[in-house]
Length: 374
View 1 (tube, rainbow, N blue to C red):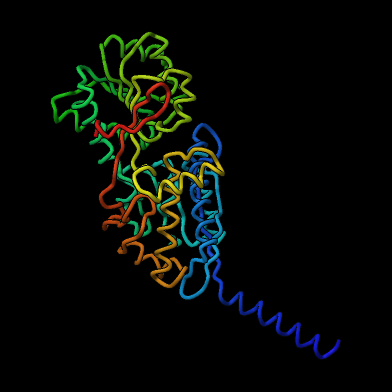
View 2 (view 1 turned 180 degrees about the vertical axis):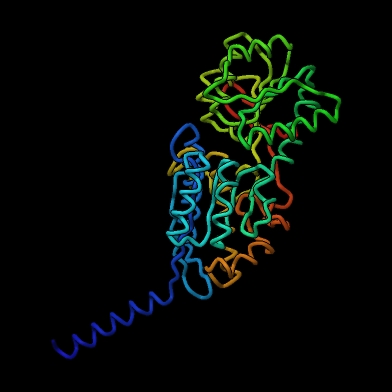
C-alpha cells in the first residue's frame, strides 16, 4: 500500500474513533400491553416515545458534551403482573438506562421492585397510589394518581351530573378496586353510600348485574377498571334499555374504547384522563401534527410518553451522565420541561406535583374535553 493510502486510512480511522468518542448511546425501555384488549394504549405509549426519541436524535441532544443517540427497547407486558416482571427483567438485561412503563397499576407495582433492585428509574402513568408508596427510590409517576382522579370523578358524579342514585362496579383489579375506593370516599362524604359490585371478566353475569342496576333506579353507573369488564357491562346496560350516565376513568377514555363500544358509548358517557391534553400548550400542537403524519390521531398516553422520554433525557443532561445511579437524584429533585405537561417536578414519593385530571364526554361518539365539568 502506498504511503498516502496509509495516511488516508489512518485519518479515516482516527475520525471514526473521534466521532464515536463524542457520542453516547442511551437505551430507554418502553413497556406496556402491546397485544390483547389494551394494546391500543400500549401502542399509543410506544408511538409517543418514538416521536420523542426521533426529536432528541435529530436535535443533536448532548449529555456531558457528547451527542446522545437514543434507542427504544420496547417490551409487551400483556397487562399481566407476571408477564410484566418478565418484561422488566428483559429490559434490565438489555442495559436500559431508564424505563417508561407500565400502563396497568397492578403490573407497575409488581415490576417496580425489580427496577429498584437494579437501580433503574421507572417513570409510569399507572395511577394507583400504592405504586409510589412502596418506599422505592426509583418509582416516579408522570400523571395524577387515583386520589386526585377519584376526587374529580366523585365531584363530577355528585356536583355536575347531580346523581340521584349511583351504582358502583369495579373489575377486581388493583386499579379498579383502588379507584372505586377513592370515588366512594368522596361520595360518602356527601352522604351518598351506593351499592358496589366487584366482578371479573371470566365469571361475570352481566345480565344479572344489569338487572340489579336497573332495580336500583341508578341514574349514574360508575365503573372502575378497563375494557375487559367495562365494555360488556356498558353494552349490556344499553341493550337492557338503561340510559344511565356511565362514568369511567383513564383505562376507558380512548377513541378506541368508544369505537369498541359499538354505539353504546355515543351518549351519556363520561371519562377522565390523568394528564394534560396536547391542545393546552403550543408545543402540543406541533406534537399532534408530527404524530398524525406518522400514526394518526394521538391517544391520551401518547403525550405522557412523549413528555416522559424528554424528562428522562433532561435529567441525564443535567446530571452529565446516562448512568442511572448518577442521574437518579437529579430526576428526583429537578424541574424539567414537559413539552406538553409544562413544568414537571416530583415530590418526595415520586408523584408529579400539581397533577391534572381532565374530564371527557362522548358527544356523538367523539370524546370531547369538558372544562365546564371540572
